[in-house]
Length: 180
Image 1 (tube, rainbow, N blue to C red):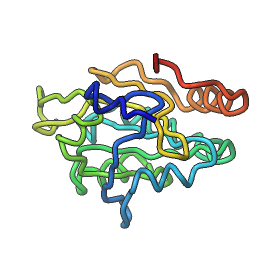
Image 2: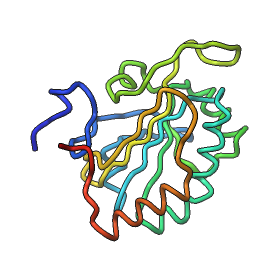
Image 3: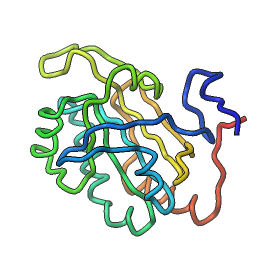
């Protein structure tokens, strides 16, 4: 398979996802390709803005509410932010995200490599620099099935929509789109 990511400078469907290794809340390390290989059908990688974002809280709580159904469908979920460990830990505690796998301390240059939009603080409570949201769907072999990258916090798909869509894709062998 040709590495289209190198020629375009962005992550594309049907290409290998960039390697990503980050610390996990609760200890251990997230190796994204290893995490993907542990999924029967897909790994959903949610890049979220951080503790300051109430829309992120809503989305992550919604994804966690469907965690059992995701597992039944062979879909793993991980949330990642540029927040350092203390802020990520506070998100987990304040938002009640005990069941969701969460990684932290995503370096800005790595966020950019994934094609995430980067913002700077415009109000108190926001980190100086943070990534905007993105969702990447990886196959067990570490290739990207699909992705959505946003330049603002709004209009994100909910857990039920993601679950139904990816379950249908797995059952029907629907191909990755946007690869032409």
